[in-house]
Length: 150
Image (cartoon, rainbow, N blue to C red; front, side, top):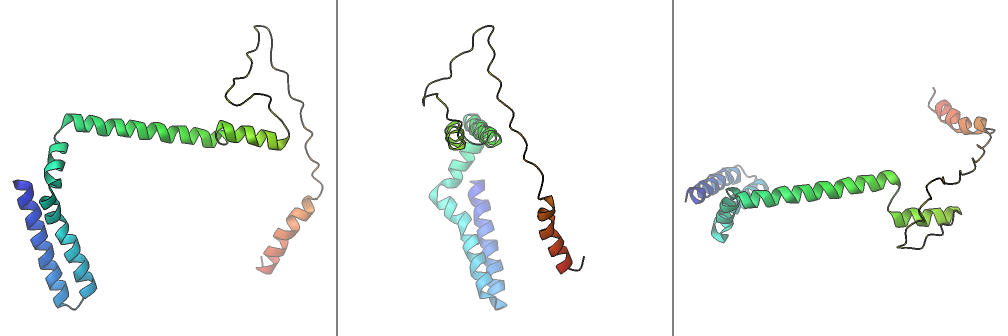
């Protein structure tokens, strides 16, 4: 009962402000204000206010919203971990195949377990690329700086 009265009062006040705005010949703003003012009455007429009030004071509904929040947090956490790792397992496998490190593990199968005393074979270190041509890298930057007089 109180919610319906408050919504009606807000709508009437908003329509009054819209009328004053229209009197000042700001018709676009007045129309927008009138549209916003009709929303609370529309919510009362559709029964959404009663649903909202019943939901706001329901511990079960709040527990449900809490579970939705936990689910969202879990989804976002897993997504951030995927981004740090460089994508999903399928994307990493495809990237490894494209790079030439063809994995022999079939999709859906797990890698073979190592024995008690066995350790994985060390990967050979790739030699770092020589840094010749660093002068060429800075020539573009020097040209831009000269162009701007720096």
